[in-house]
Length: 240
Image (cartoon, rainbow, N blue to C red):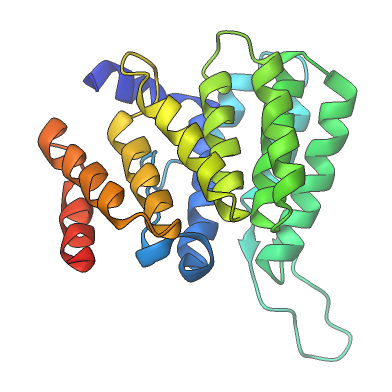
């Protein structure tokens, strides 16, 4: 993938906030991905402020910023001192944070519909449903996002989110089909090497070891400078 395309992906609001899902995957790897691998399709550590800034001049920018702040809020243990309350701007658990963010984004999606803020919010509804283990709801949200996103990057990334929801739900054949289609879009905005890593992980989950090996090998053969190359080698070694 060209450097310019990777830069565009990293800067896009949709891609940046996929990191929330990735962080959840990393925290629950055994649940999400066979072999303990969660493929990161964006650069970690990019602040949510970048997303807010891009929406600030658009209708709904302010409310998107508030919802993003919830989604990225700090997790802090609930106070044990009698009479003490949760610190402002923090949540006691990831589940509590995701529930709060989901509610905020649902309200924005209902308010702004197919406008830019509404599409962004609907995507984040999918993110938080996925983080909460509500896979069918996440799939529906991603499908709606893709249908309304037109030719923006939200369309392919929503399809990626839907594939992740299918994989998490144990619908391996459907996930494999979805990842395969996305991996064929060589000129699109998604990093094909990252999609291939997810495809390989889906093959592993489905018990299709030979296909998984072949897909990991594709990453090494076709993307020699891929940031996923080391992970691909480790996964190949683990498959024997």
